[in-house]
Image (cartoon, rainbow, N blue to C red; front, side, top):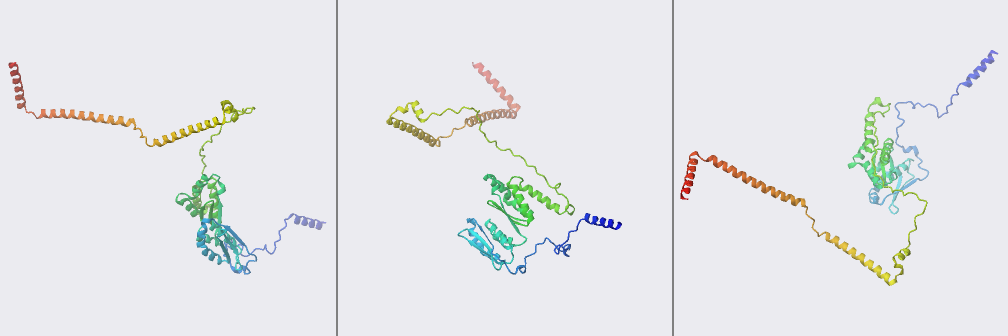
Length: 387
């Protein structure tokens, strides 16, 4: 009995214990899984020995390019052709259709190189220079073409926001390129970017926020600069950086009020019927006139309108020859200025006379003054005696 109970308890314990997942031959731990010297995220350069048989099917991509790129593409096409030839990819420039085509050949070994070649012709069609676009053939370089035309409906607003991305003398664009480590080109309705996956993600977010008017690129540059500084501190590697980053509040700018028409009060009755042309003629009596008189009246009205028009045109032509009226304030000011000058001259003359008299009195000697006064008195006496 005891043995049976022990066996039952053992079965119950086995049932309650979780079953271990049986690992297959591919799930076995590898010796290089925990090796610290191996970088599992490193992208290794493709070795042609990995795919000696080549491609089974021909893959091709084509894209159209604008007419203004035709001349440039003709000049740089030998360079593009030689760059793709190293990877065994054929390319064709069709000037009649205005298209570029890339396709795999028997010499192609890397299966992903056709996707890179497709990105190359896309970048060339979006006005990226050929030496820069050829860099996309490297494994570590990726690209992203952001379409911005559908984000803003108003054309003036679209151009203004697109200019925010570029900035004065392309200063904003250069700052974004340095901080994100990507090449950025704003051209027409698209923004072409080349760089790492992390940088492309940042560029797309900044471009979308700018075009949707969520945040100006300058504020995003400030945030990226702060993150760049925080990355240098190893103590903050595992912490949340939100408390260090600046927070920008969006200010509501007052917009012009749209002049809405005032709604008329609702009435259940329809508006009165407007008089017809015949009713108006009956009221004025024109309906009963003969055709000759009607045509004469129309001709008379036409002549009156012409006379008014000619008089108006003549008046406009003569306006150029009418001299402008001189402002009255200037004349009054000039008269006042002349009067003020005359008054000042008179006062100066009076002061000069007074000053001259004072000088003469100071220079007279006592003896001469007495002699002169006695002579004056004797002269007066002789005059009285004669009289």
